[in-house]
Image (cartoon, rainbow over all chains, first blue to last red; front, side, top):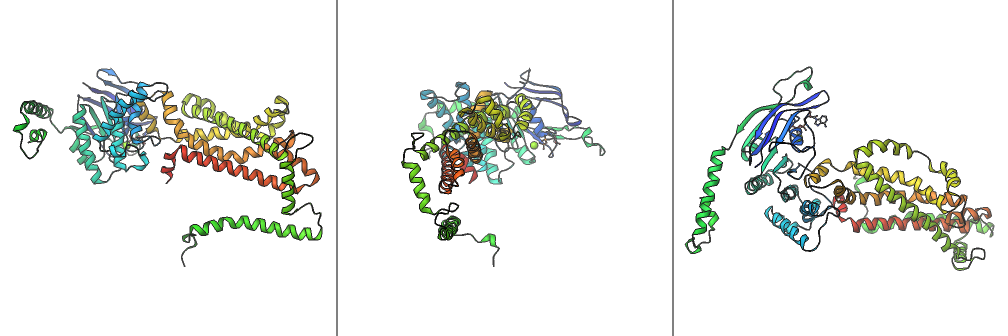
Length: 278
Length: 272
Ligand SMILES: Nc1ncnc2c1ncn2[C@@H]1O[C@H](COP(=O)(O)OP(=O)(O)O)[C@@H](O)[C@H]1O
Ligand SMILES: [Mg+2]
C-alpha cells in the first residue's frame, strides 16, 4: 500500500512562483501521468516527490508520513538522460543498488552472495531484453536500451514509487512504442505506483490510469512570475473498479487453469496464459 | 580544388610527415655544427654528434671520483625520484581534496575560494621560504613540486566532480548509496581518468620545478648537472641531457596514457 498526498504544496524560487496550490491524493498502484507545457513545473513537481527539492509551503505525505528529506531507496527514478553509470557494465549497473545495501564499506559482494545478486540482476535484464548485452558499457547501447537499463536498475530495489521524467522523450517512435508496452507490463507485475512526466498527450492517456494537467491558470503579462502553475484538470482514465475486477477475473482464471491437467490444453502448444487473455 | 581542410594524409604519409620536423631539426643542427667545426675544430657552441656520444658514454660508463657514481644514471635516478615523489604526493592530495571539496557543499563553500587564491601564488617566489623552512635538502624540492602542482590537480578534480550530472548523484541516492559509497562507487572511478590526464598535463611543470630546485642547490640531478657544466660552456653535455629529459618526459606521458586506456576502457568508448 502506498498513498501519496500533496497538501497545498507551493514551490517558489526567490520571487518566482513555479507551482502553487497543488492538492492531490494518489492511491496505491496508480499510474499517474503529469502533462503540461514546457516550463510549467512538471520536473519541479517530480523533484519534490524525489526530495531533490523541498516544497516552499505545504506538505507531501507518503503513507501518512512526511516525505523523507533526501532521496531514498523507496522511490526509484528514471530521468530522460544520465540515469545510468557510464563506468559500470550493464550488469554492474543493475547490481549496484543491492551491493550498496549489503556491503556498506566496499559496495561490493563476493562469492555466493554476489552470485545471488547476479542471478536476480540477470533475471531483470532478461525481462527488459538486455541479457545478451550484460557485459557492455552503457555508451555502447542505444538510447532505448539505456532507458531499459535504467528501469532495471531502479526496479531491482523494489521501490514503492517509480518516478519517470520524460523517460521516452529522446527516443524514436518505434522504440517508444516498445517502451510503452514494457513499462505498463512492469507496472502490472511490480504492483507499484508510477508517476510519469511527459509532454506527449497520447502517451499520457495510453499509459496513465490518471492524468493531471499542470498549467498556469492566471497570467499577468507584466509579471509572469507572479503566478505559479497548478493542477488545472484531473482525469481518471482507467476506472479503478474496472481495473480491479479485471485483475480479479484474471487471477481466478489462472487459478482455474492450474486445476486443468496439461492434457486438456490445445495440441498446438498454446500456453495456458494465452487462453486466459481471451 | 577542395578546401585544404578536406585533404587528409594516408596513414603511411602520416608517419613520414610526423618524422619530418625531427629530421629537419637534426639536419639543420648538423649543417650548422659542421660549418662551425670546419672553421674552428674546438668550437664549444655547436659540438658534433660524435662529441655528444663521447660525453654520454663518459658520463654513463665511468665512475665519478668525487661521488663514486656513474653520473648519468645517478643524476637520472635523483631527478626521477624527486619528480615521482612530488607528482605522486600532488596527485594524492589533489584527488582527496578535489573530491571532498567538490562533493560536500559545506567544504566547497569553505575552501573553494581559498584554493582559487592559493593556486595563484607563484611557487618559485616562495622557494626561498621553503628553503628556510625545510632546509636545502630533498624535502624542500619535493614541497616545491607539490606546491606548484597540487593546486592545479585539486582544481581540475573539483571541476570534474562538479561536471558529473546531478541525475547520477540523485540516482545513486535512490539506489540507497551513502556519501562514502557515492564517493567510492560513483565519483572516484569517474574522476580517475581525468586525474591521469591532469598528471600528464602537469609533467612539464613538474620538470620545471625539479630543474629549478636542482639548479639552486643539490648534490646531483639532471638539472644540477646542466647548470654545473654551463660554466664550462659544455654544450656536449647540456644538449644530450636536454634530449634525455625530453625523452623521459615523453615516456612518462605515454605510459600514463596507456595506463588510462587499459584501466578505464569505458572512458575511451565515450570519446569514440
Ligand atoms: N533551481 C531552479 N532555480 C530557479 N528556477 C528554477 C529552478 N528549477 C526550475 N526553475 C524554473 O521553474 C520553472 C519550471 O521548470 P521545470 O519544472 O523544469 O519545467 P518543466 O519540466 O515543466 O518543463 C521554469 O521556469 C524554470 O526556469
Ligand atoms: Mg522537465
